[in-house]
Image (tube, rainbow, N blue to C red; front, side, top):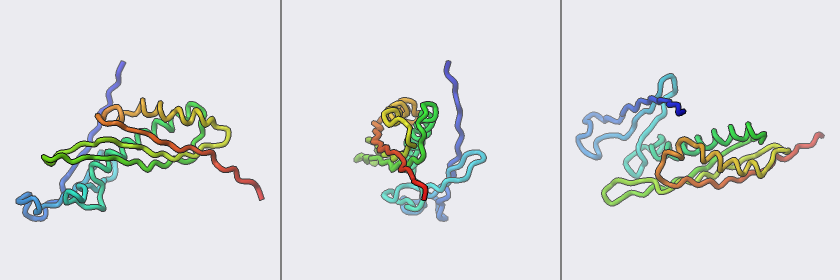
Length: 162
């Protein structure tokens, strides 16, 4: 039995510099991304496409979505398999190619999670659960390019008294 979930977002363009889209260089790429009862995310295009480097672009958000979904599944699977995660940070990277006609697509995304687990947690299980998290990740299951994962897992250093 499948269960459906619906999501709603609003994207509002804020880049009208006074003349709308009268020319390619005459408008800003800034926009706001929102969802009911959530803070706004400042968006733009990549600077290569005349965007604001200080704002998130769709490509940033694609890579972040894959990373976040994987992390949330991984933490869940660790909790139910008695692997105690103390710290998790991922420096995910994606590669996109631009085609001659101005379009493009992602070629791949690689996750690079660095995880610290508590002493007594099983390292082999912690490693295996990355595969399981990838298999369950809603976002990874929805894209048409490879998503790799190169985790580094270490035990927390025990701190002595005194």
